[in-house]
Image 1 (cartoon, helix red, strand yellow):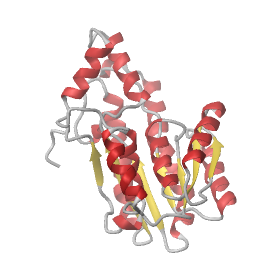
Image 2 (cartoon, one colour):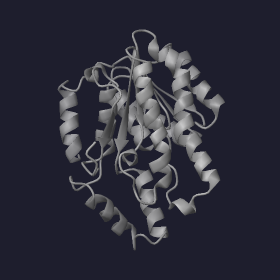
Image 3 (tube, helix red, strand yellow):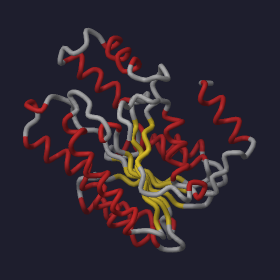
Amino acid sequence: MTAVQTVIRPLRERGVMDLRIDGNVALATASSGGLGFASARALVREGANVVINGRTEGTLAEAAEELRAEATGGAEVVAIQGDLTDPDDVADLVEGTVAEFGRLDHLVTSAGGPPSGPFLGIDDAAWQDTYELLVMSVVRTVREAAPHLRADGGGTIVTIASRTVKEAVDSMVLSNSVRMGVIGLEKTISTEFAPEVRANAVLPGSHETERVENLIEQGVERGEYASYEEGYADRVSEVPLDRLGSTEEFGATVAFLSSPVSGFINGTAVPIDGGSLGSNL
């Protein structure tokens, strides 16, 4: 059991972590792995019914089975395959969620990260693809989900972005630039949809995910690091807590922001980065 688990699991067992979302319905996009999956896992552990999404059928089915094994209070997990850059798939995803459970209380938006590289190494196609993946996928999902989230007393939206919106990271020009659009959207809908719907963003730093592994490997390929171990150590060295984040603690934060326990938090962007950001705001 990790250090994080020794804190989180005993609290949950004693009922201290009851977020009062059992029986609710949540949709988490791009959730067959990574931080999207971590968010779905935290929600289903709190007793929420969760719809997960991904492009690869086999990976999505495996994720659904893993989540069902961790569900509490009779929570159900449904997997709906779809490409978030396809408007029809996005519409089907939201419609399928409501058809399955009759409602939608919480939306968590996630998407695979864009490739890394310097500005002059990124062509127009990569810029367009990244905009579709990171911004338009959220725009379309929120648009489809909005009437359902506003019904029955209202709900929540949590957008997973990146710490790069607060502080640019070398060789991450696509993430540094394009993700800012998601934060502008989140801030706008936090007022337009209020008081029925609260909207917040989370800004993850480096966590123990396949995405971070891939970024380190890309850095090795570009010659920025002599080895994977050097790249990993470099990321850890930037974090005052002297470690990368765990997906469990990340998911717990998303579940908290989705719950009435965080009922007066709206329109904010919460860094989850172990204190690695150098910005004051």
